[in-house]
Image (cartoon, rainbow, N blue to C red; front, side, top):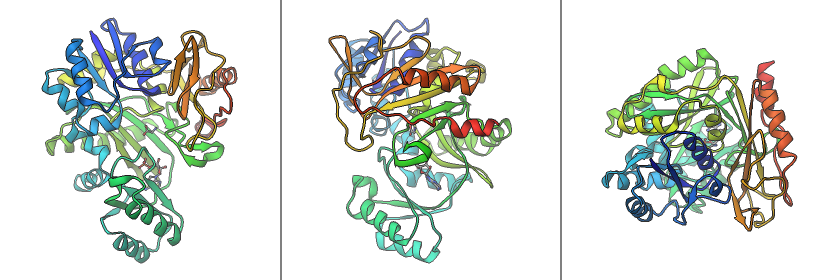
Length: 426
Ligand code: AMP
Ligand code: GLY
């Protein structure tokens, strides 16, 4: 099969390296890809949001399967456009991608179908939102922009002043554009967070191994929110009992609800969960693989990803098609100094071989450029150093040993990835 993966980050690199292991994969392309991805796929200079470009390329090159990985082309209907041409895809249609693209849609869905989530109200008027918050007078309070906001549209306001400022930024200054036309104001929940990615074929849901993201830029969960600075899998807080409860109260009801609403979901559905004292709650849904969750999850997948993706498209997915190793995996992100704010690009990276890899680990490139045989940083998150081993501690040791052997000017990593997970294992 000829396969095209749309996107350019570490998640896409991990998807490509897993697809490549399938005997069915004859040739893999990536639009637009990056320096490190070019060692594993043919990169084509078409932007991830260029629907017409991707459709035309797929037709001209007789592509058999297109994997649309990022949220914005999914929300913009890339899958619909490809399916119209009879091209097999992995990823939800525009209607189904609303589960991530609109928090108002997803919150209303959870309320209607009794899926546990923080209690909330929706507002389109900042004054009304503020008087609701003042009346409740319970802090912290969570304010979320309705639409896609690169994972940054969530404000946890510790007091009245912060809530007022947050509403002003989102709804009046429109720092997230039209995503801020509506906001969700919701109850603040506490408990360990778990990411569960699941394959969904419209009606059947098969969860993958659980994982834990580390969203803040600095050690001890300090600093700004990022796209994710590292992950471990499995997540030790996610026990068998919790998994069963999630299956019954969250996963199956969500998939059935989407079907009932005439928006059957096909692709990877990401459940962002919080294990509260009252049981597992949904914090958010994503309509796609997470980044950097994918790096650890697919690292542990023992099954043929091409076959799974075909079954998802054809509606023939079964549990026995999806097997995970019993090993543990850890991914540590090496980022550019200054990320998630401004940073320099074009700095040469030392410590990588010609393929952009190192022996014994998988290095998923998030933002690199290859020029004359040298890899340069070309984004905020640059590399995801990913290791697997029999224990989480051994996987982390192996990942950090390799992180320490790679460098470029001003690069940084969190030094405490997996620390909370390890403490849960003790
Ligand atoms: P989201 O973009 O919805 O995943 O939110 C980003 C992060 O904000 C989450 O990973 C949580 O850590 C935090 N968060 C979101 N909603 C809540 C909530 N209701 N209570 C506590 N923390 C939350
Ligand atoms: N790592 C969080 C996300 O992909 O949204």
